[in-house]
Every structure is written in C-alpha cells, then in structure tokens.
Length: 365
Ligand SMILES: Cc1cc2nc3c(=O)[nH]c(=O)nc-3n(C[C@H](O)[C@H](O)[C@H](O)COP(=O)(O)OP(=O)(O)OC[C@H]3O[C@@H](n4cnc5c(N)ncnc54)[C@H](O)[C@@H]3O)c2cc1C
Image: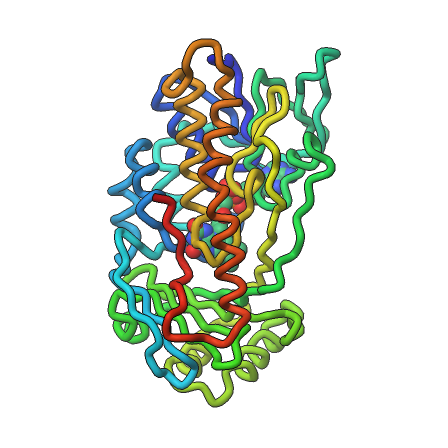
C-alpha cells in the first residue's frame, strides 16, 4: 500500500514526525491542525533512548540534542530533602516542547500544514472507507488514508471507535517553565523529584537548557482539590502544598510566572483492540495515552510515526499483509507493558515513598 494522498489530523509530535519520515521516503502529506502557528505549545518533557533512536530515522537526533539538556541521573528525595533513590540515566534529555517542535519541524515544506482546521467528522464511501474529513470551519479534505494524530481527547478516535473511553487520571500536574540558571546549576544534570512522606504529592524538576527549568507539582486530586486555573490561586495552591518543605520549592515558586503556569489533567485511555479501522489509523496519544509517570508519551509517539511511515513504504510489510495491520499489531505489543508499568508507578506515587521505589521513567527495551 502506498496511498496517493494522506491527510494528517493534528500537527503535534506524532503528526509532524510522520510527515518528516514519510517525506524522506518520497511521499507527501497534508497536516490539518486546529491551533494557529504561534499558539502556546506547552511546557516540556524528557526524551529517552527509544525516542532518540526513532529520531535518528528522521535525521533529527542531533538537531534535537542540540536544543536539549542532558540528564545523567534521576534523584528522588523526600520533602525534607533526604535522599531516597539515585539512579544513572541512559540517553535522557530534558527539552521544552517549543524547542522540540522547532527541531522536529525543520525543513517541512511550506504549505503542508493548514492551521485553524479543527476536525469535526468524516464523510464515508458506501464501502465504509472514509472519503473526506470535514473541519469545524466547513472546509474539508479528501484522502486515501487519514491519520488521527489529535492527542488524548482525539475526535478522530471518537469517530472510528465511539465506545473508547478516556478517564481522567487521579493524578493532576501543575506545570511551569522558569528561567533561572542558579536552579538549573543546582540540579547538576539531574532529573529531581521531591516526594512528600505521606505519598500523593511530589515536586519534579527537569532542566531543559542551561537557563530553563521545567517544574511540576504532581498531586492526588482526591486529597488536594484541583485549583482553578487563575494565577493567584495557582500560586497560593503551590505555596500551601509545599509549605515547610526543605529543598528548592520556595525558590521555584518565587521565580515562577503563574500567568504562564498550567494545570494538566492526564488521561488514561483504555487499551484499544487495534489502532486503525478501514483507512483511518491512530498515532501517539490518540492511540494510546499512557501515564505521564512513564515519560513515554512523546517517545512512543515518534516511534509510532516512524514505524507507520516505513511500513507504508514497505519497510516492514511482508507479502500481502496490510501495513496498517502490521503497524497496529506491532505498536500495540510495544505499548502493552507500558500501560501496566504506568499503573504501577501511579500506585507507588500514591503511597508513602520508600528507598527502594522505582524511578518515574519507563524504558521500552
Ligand atoms: C504534564 C505533562 C507532562 C508530560 N511529560 C512527558 C514526558 O516527560 N515525556 C514524554 O514522552 N511525554 C510527556 N507527556 C506526554 C506528551 O506531551 C504527549 O504524549 C505527546 O505530546 C503526544 O504526542 P501526540 O502527537 O500524540 O499529541 P500532541 O502532541 O498533544 O498533539 C496533538 C495535536 O492535535 C491537535 N488537535 C487536537 N484536536 C484536534 C482536532 N479536533 N483537529 C485538528 N487538530 C487537533 C492539537 O492542537 C495538537 O497540536 C506529558 C504530558 C503532559 C500533559
């Protein structure tokens, strides 16, 4: 199968990564993104070895590395700043989402991405195949293959699998990025986590450049009701939850612009039976939203994109097997253990910390 026309719905990590790999293999696509080019693209994340391996297929490994910050260790301490766990990390880098998208999207031909196109629904051929995607602004696009890359609350997934369910995770994150070289230096290339002794509350620090630090407060919403997304409330909430903590909490709060701080509800998607239906396939969070504890959302989204682009251009196809079926089977198998691991990490987070707990990152080796 080498579809003549591919329309990608959602221009985030999976959508752009697919476009880049497919372009390198001689194909072209159109990307339909609901946001505008300059819309605030969010905070940041940790890239892991499997993400870098997938990036090397797109030729973006070094461009991304140049914009990221190496993390050599993961250190977990309690809220009194007593060390609990220290573990070496392999090929982990912190990066802001905007820097990552900049490196990933380099050289994408102008005009491939159309902004302000929020997917609404499909029109179908009598055969049951999708024929045209319709956007909320009334515009539409015809294609042979549609890729739903529209994130955790995917409308494309809702169209092809109406029974699929995303439940709000019990753990919520307040996330911000600050510029503070002293705090970055204090991390000494470590991904740091400070955990409250009662469990269900943690502060995470991820250096993303020499000056930029992503930080988040992770909390059990059953114990700590989620505040409204208003700067003053977010600030008082952060102060209240970390009152009396040793370590960098107070310094972080003092350095934060709470007008640029977000509340992120992570979603847990019950595993799908397959990642496609007819001529519509799902990639990234649309296919498999995993717990943020695994730090695998971005990494596995890039892997999906590379795998599918190569399968469609026969890299993995054997005989007459449908590349969408091969993609779906292979990637579902790869994700299976991550779901379980994410649940286990969440259980550990909700319980009081111990000195033999796992670090909150999952490898896919
Ligand atoms: C607080 C937080 C921390 C995280 N930390 C990490 C981490 O450390 N490591 C990690 O690997 N991952 C992390 N993740 C997860 C990671 O951000 C996602 O898994 C990743 O972005 C998935 O890529 P995607 O392309 O599937 O979705 P996204 O990157 O979310 O892209 C979806 C795109 O689709 C667009 N869209 C949505 N609906 C429509 C529509 N109807 N029509 C058209 N376009 C639409 C959106 O505007 C967006 O551009 C974190 C997530 C959160 C919330």
